[in-house]
Length: 256
Image 1 (spheres, rainbow, N blue to C red):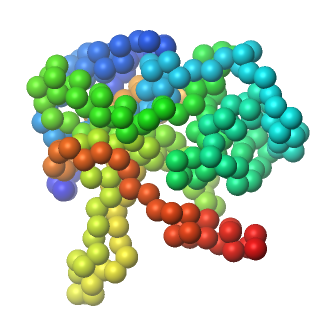
Image 2 (image 1 turned 30 degrees about the vertical axis):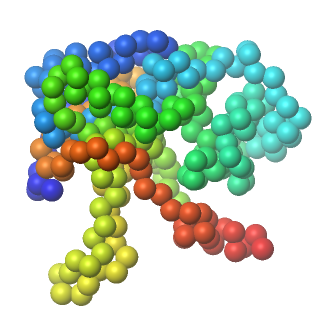
């Protein structure tokens, strides 16, 4: 990878269900930096992707189950929100007031990624149904219309253990390697690295969120240029089993 690169926020205005999201992104890229070039990496906010795909839930259509009412009382949440979170989760690990800690598609995350921020009034926006497929589709649409090969990352904001604030994490990826394995390389003093792997897609997502913002910026995308990562046909974000995770492993051991 190159020692320097640039990140440009792409402003699209408010995205609504059914909007031609890729069209808006292409127009924004032309306006901001002359359009896409081979090797660019496009980072997209998951809420905007899900909204454009129509994955928006109106709270007035949700009927909470008894379990939703029970968890809502325990964690001081709207039962309707809890019901949506339950429907989006593979399992509930625990919670704190206002949040349920969930397992979803092999990932540990709050409220199963269900978001009220940047959602229309009275609505919730879950994660895209298939973030990897969303990334592939947008990558292919840009290739067809702009005749360029770009990588695409669908990004979410997550908290981290014992840290205040959020940072970006890749939940969908197409065209670039999400994790680079540095095992076998030498450190500064010649020792072989034994466990180091770099979460490249997560790092790019975090950098992009600096220009995308989390509030009313209307900048649900960022174009990363000059990083020098090869663009190919890779798809997906590498994960590990819960038993291999330091945090989940400790949590499970303490529950036994």
